[in-house]
Image (cartoon, rainbow, N blue to C red; front, side, top):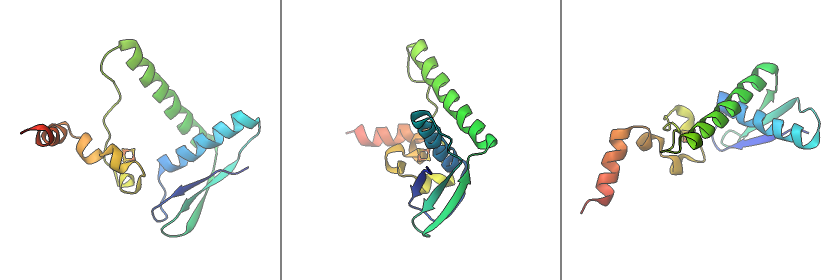
Length: 124
Ligand code: SF4
């Protein structure tokens, strides 16, 4: 069993793509009780496929990210106050992210820009 993650951009290597794929492998391993050693990222724009090995380093990176997310969500719920989830930080990978139009990292990542955008939307 080999998971394949489709990306719309051209062939590039981003650590977060590899961790996303590795997280899928961890889910498959847990669901089916098997070991998934490799997967691939398919880049649609360049029609190229990049092999990814789920080595111990990538597994640790992925598990650390999962634990960090759980801790963040737990902290936010315990605090019972405004979400502690950090703001999006715009980076090159964002340009090809399928969530770009929803996440709006260029606007939401900078509090002054968000405030100006909101003011422009809701002022009469
Ligand atoms: S657009 Fe948002 S979700 Fe996508 S990579 Fe950038 S920060 Fe992450």
